Image 1 (cartoon, rainbow, N blue to C red):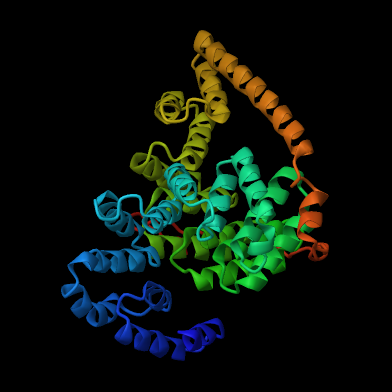
Image 2: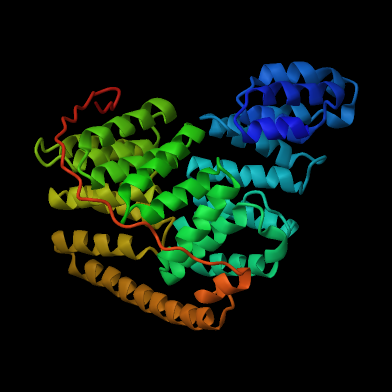
Length: 431
């Protein structure tokens, strides 16, 4: 097992043979199974080794389902992983098992269902406050959902355990997210993200965060981070999205189109991938590809009326075309699941104004004002709490006894490159 760990950390394929030898002697060694799955060993090969032991041990009958679920979790079959993990989660034998809950949270996160991901991460960390696995994904999803207060609480808990956590990557990702989002101290957040990358050279979340921090000032290094993340997890949507966005920011539209096409071919025609394709089309002012973007967004919204990124883009396209009825329809469906979303109410107010329904427009403007006032009060309260918190600003560094380096200097200006974006009617292919 120790030899396999050394080989794995150094990228030596002999790690597979070591972990297989472990399973021959100890078929229920879950860590070895987990490593083999991450090293892309086929599920059938693993099951061939452990199935005889499972057959003779009825209490371990769940293990074959767990192995299939973990394999699906490390591939594009995330929906299948969720179904298998739900079976285990609902079983009497594994009721409340933290490993299953954490895996389910990760599966929802990978699938883009951030609300459910947060729900299950909270369950996992409530059941086991000392849990390390999944901390990085939990911080990422809290950041994506703008739950800064929850991120602050999580960071404070980790700082209190700093001595025991300094050698693992996940807590550093949490601290990096907190510094980046709350204090906008990029030098500190960069240092923490770099520390996480050093401690775990294949941490996708650490690489994505480091790239995000660098994307404004040092795009070439940001691209390197995103490319490495994509290489480590080609089944994940986030690295593909980040690469597409950085290529668009550099006006490298052909490369952006290529990445959007990778998303379609790898992950299928999901709301997220269709919206990414639409984003590429919308940047092509030369060929005026808005109609093709609209087709992709309409399909995305039809699949999931609550996917807000698609709803925002499509409703604005409808506004430009004065298709107010269509915009009102998709916005009202989205608001059913996001009643306190300011942006939805703002766009809906514009739609009703366009339809000369001024009373309804005024109603939604009133909602916007109340929500913005509530948000301002909440932000002020959070800032007061943050000022008192031991984690705020320099206290993070002093608590952990760290010296923080600056972010590398900015890139040179990037030359623009032209591109041709072509729509394939049935395949939504970008070339």
